[in-house]
Image (cartoon, rainbow, N blue to C red):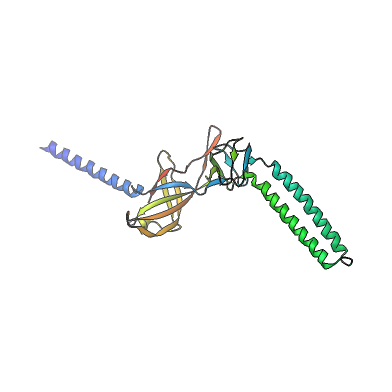
Length: 251
């Protein structure tokens, strides 16, 4: 009889301890409060011109800086047109300057004609210069090239997708938080989060809470931002967090 009492008491103690541990875990990790990680900027680079890709400066997985040339489209004809337009523009400019110095001996109509011609030639030169610039495909942001749609030698057309570039140093998280849990979030607050498979705990800042509650799910859309960090493995650096990962928010 005593033995039975001891066993029952031990079972109660163990059950109580397990319940408390589960409650503590629930309070810390807030099951169900998950968020998807995205790159702060995810850019699709499109072609502004027609022609053959004659030089490819980037590969998938490569880090690029803002303004880096990632590809060159054949611009031989455009450069010839620009050089011709530049020559005509310089001649018109010199002609105008010469006429202006002799304004005592020429009519105002002639001066206005020279001015008009100068402006026209300058406009043509500016447009031809822009045509040359369009043949360069540059990265609009600093990030990682995640996809290339064309190879060297292929022909590209205006509006074609050329590359996908994701900003990796700054990320944002989107969480759909139950309306009963929104009280734990406020703009500017720091929220800790974890990612499965990574021992490190991270922090993100709440930057936006939707003023609207989704009636179908009774949740509020919350956006958080975080700074990514680099890790070195085997001499190669890579970012710790990746867009597409699912984070568990800790409150």
